[in-house]
Image 1 (cartoon, rainbow, N blue to C red):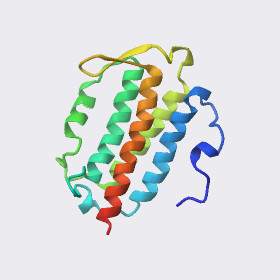
Image 2 (cartoon, rainbow, N blue to C red):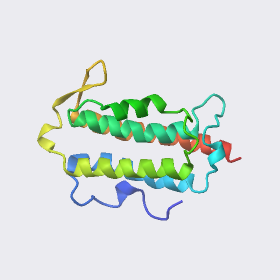
Image 3 (cartoon, helix red, strand yellow):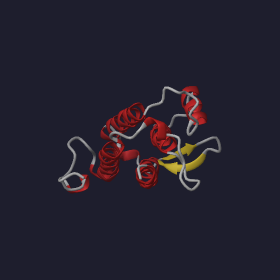
Image 4 (cartoon, rainbow, N blue to C red):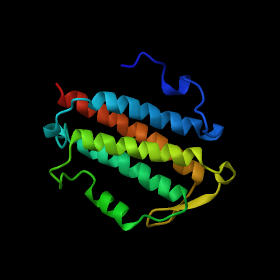
Length: 168
């Protein structure tokens, strides 16, 4: 466990709009803790489930994919074919080359991409509506960013429990 205070207690992030600091802090906190938790996690346990819960591999894929999708919607874009294909493969060990390290690195890159988008966000449009998903359900830009943070933390918590049980 880190000796530093949690990310949100380390002060504001440079070049990050004040209204989006909590989102950035949550993503950074999840990334720090996820990297620590997954260090040395055996690849052969990636797809194991405990008591019907989702596998670590699913959570790692899903964390990455959801950030990508929600931040795409925040930019008022629809999902491209690659994103839809990624979504269809979440939780399925269809490619035997998946590794813990590779999935963690993919999440880290997606967090970096999200932080860049947050840092460049036009805060005057945070209350603008954005269509979400095939159903084009209404959200706002800030709603999408906030949900990305809380969804990341929700799945981080589930991943934490699953990994700790599997390591027993």
